[in-house]
Length: 185
Image (cartoon, rainbow, N blue to C red; front, side):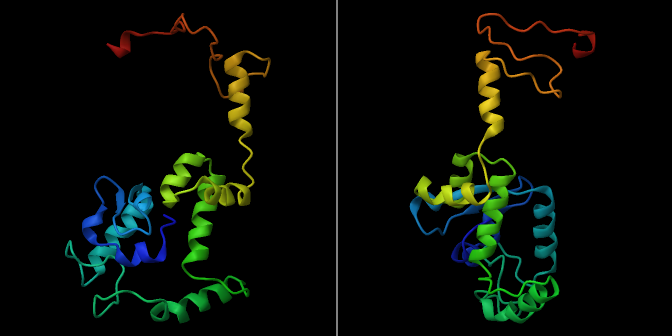
């Protein structure tokens, strides 16, 4: 999800809505950081399995906590396993376990096409200047958006092959609907 270390450590089960697949960050670095984040189906399932296996399942208990005490989960608890996984993956450079994973998650979101505003909201940033780092790292240039705007304005860009009907530039006339509509009744 790209949430900060402190937000992850403060996360309680009452903040994870597995049926709705939403995670609420309530204990944030800034007021703008208080936010809701959509969970992918795979992540919601992984969290459900994590909760089922945890000794600490109550609403007020931490999602990620020390496995026997239920207290804040510190980096030193999992550092040996994390370092071993990095070595197995061939990563020899120093990695900051929480912050570098946050960077990776947000950069992947940007590369997958998340809008700058959505990325800023998900990250809990207060300033677009910070969010731009992730957009730049992902190499985002918003080519699709520029081409869609040109199509909308009728400036000569060809329609992409995947569209079954061309985009309309006539705002006053609705597009005709073709085909058998009886199945919609």
